[in-house]
Length: 508
Image (cartoon, rainbow, N blue to C red; front, side, top):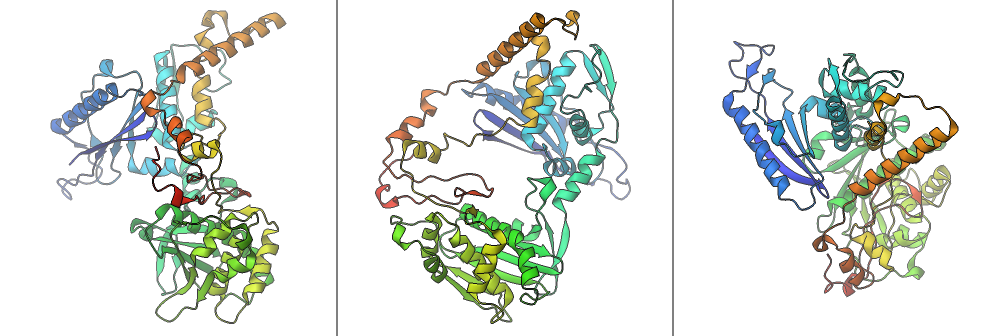
């Protein structure tokens, strides 16, 4: 049975996924090596659904990109599908991407392997093919991706300066090896022992910086059940952390706290084990952290912000034979995140370490001092909250002022692809002689790129201009800071508003 769905993954950008499940027809009489035709009905369904997606894109007022992903199963036998798609009727902003499950899992674990990067790579490939270049032995999307990175995003090696279309290029068929190795290293799937004596299959939840991978792992089975259970691993010591809500469900806030705890443990754990080697048992340990809801109805009181108040808001419940140790986080601790220093997080980690060590092995004072010494900064933090006061805060709160990001590798590669030949004739060659000619070339290049970038920026319609509503919103509206990296006095978690004054305010 084929399944199709459409969603908007960014403003003006739409994703269309057609999922083709595995088929086990005639098995075991016909083995996995045999190729199966999905049949005329399946091919017709795909073509018709693609045309419906085209019609949908035509009705969108600010459509910038439409992507159809034909998601093929990696199990069972190889499949053949021949949808009668009429490319001549395709919208100019449409991209077609056949992809197997196994390819998607590899790409997603690689640097520059997110969907937006792969889509730009396919746009670049299509642009070059329209110009007269032919790519042979592509050998799948992962192999093309590996070649794309090997050529620094050019797809045509830079040393081939004299190549001109029409031209055929044969791709190496082993370019997929590097992405597969990278994905395996980044995910690092492993079975970790638990307190009950069994094992859980885990992998790293993030790999933003492949050169500095953290010993943090998330349980895959528990993730499927929407449970936030992960571990910080230091040799034979496996410290399991599970975050739960003591009130209304708050998945986003719970995940941020869970990720922050594991990041702290990975940062201070090695030094603590050196300074206090006999404090923590060399077997798996489990701590449950129960977090209160983030609905705080009073203003932040600066006089109430202190390390002692943060400590008293945390209660450690020792584990028993049938239940793990638990850290109860009171609502008063959340207010401590508004302090300039990071002592609220230091006290939380100290309480968790106390639960990991067991009763009587170490005091909270000693553990807090060890955490401060290991991190050696009062500014290093992952959780923070503040009130929104200025109009800029309100714009950030409704998502109209995202964080400034450097242009990505794929965006840079797509922007420069064929960019010179948009204003320069190929017959003039690739060499420019003379200072004045070089200056003129650079001026034309800049003007052409700038014009293309300006043309790509489309003004929002009046109905989507929510900045007016944001400015008119009452002061102290809640804002949510995005991100997830340690920073100096401004890491994300939650921003405390005067919510009581906002109950009647209409947020856009």
